[in-house]
Image (cartoon, rainbow, N blue to C red):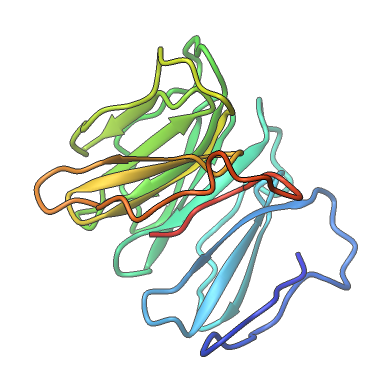
Length: 196
């Protein structure tokens, strides 16, 4: 839960000196950049700056650990996603379905919210699950050098990133462009996420 800020990013607080029941597994910025949320594997939410608390799964029994979170476009709610594809929606986040209780080839490793409030789930094999969001492609069923660890939405499409730094772009109308990747580059440690 330690937070490191660079450039114009402001520091609003962290869980770096707090004893946590479970480790922090993700963070998300507010729409205006004036705050952020941290989420732990048990779904505990820690809000800083102008980030509001809308609810959490901290203290609840979960079938699988939380692996990510994403705020709604206006920041008045958020989604949590578990490794089994379970979705927990708080504030103005609209639940549109989940993969919870379904057989998955690989666990879910992240999610991203569209500008319209729909969302994507991504599995470690790059399988994509859409909920009120357009499907543009996936690496599900494609042999990968390293597992997918995250995704980011931009324009009309999305990026996937693998732990070796490989980038996969799926452009919808006006979607993301490929600018390069760390795939094939010797890394000291694996990549763990992406931001669009």
